Image (cartoon, rainbow, N blue to C red):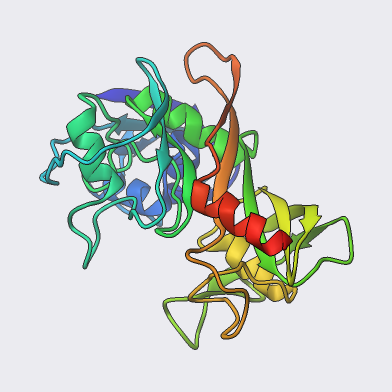
Length: 298
């Protein structure tokens, strides 16, 4: 087990501080606490809500990765980059990232378990190596961690917003401005639990967009997300009256005719978890995406 020790920077719940120290979710932190893997001032605590004061000494025994029961499947993957610590893949449109109810096979995780011998265990047995997600119908670049040290480093970059992600998106309607910033909180929709929505009290969410080209009844944008919320681009663009073309959840009923959701994770810029070198990688734009844009140019 890897031991992480830290002085509490402020008064807070134990699960909050453990999640911050280890760059994991609060739910994962709560599991480790319940397992007796966390201590405050040398005394083990099994309650996530334990009150911790600034200056208290925290220690977390991060468990070794557990073997996963998820099936390995020989599914072709396009690797854009790979070394001992990370892999970068080009996820196709239509592929679910990890197994869940109703999608236990055919996912990116199933393919990764077949293609790679090492994956980090920080994300748990269902999400080995998965640092961040893409929606099923969004294509493009995804970063995979091969070990826990790499995973924790990359997760910390996500949290610090030093990892830069840009998407290409075709949205409904021409844009009058050359760019904009959408700073609106996002939470689960109360009307439809499958959807997210701009909602007061939701998680802070920031999206920046730049107009690349106005098309016929649509616009091609470069979209930079500063946070990584579920469906963030789709929800934010809908909130300003320009939903992503081809979106079955948030799109227009009689909008632009497209063969797929026109959202592609195009570039990713981050610091290599071992060397610290700044890296920028790009996922080629799928043919169906470029062909649809060409048609919309008319």
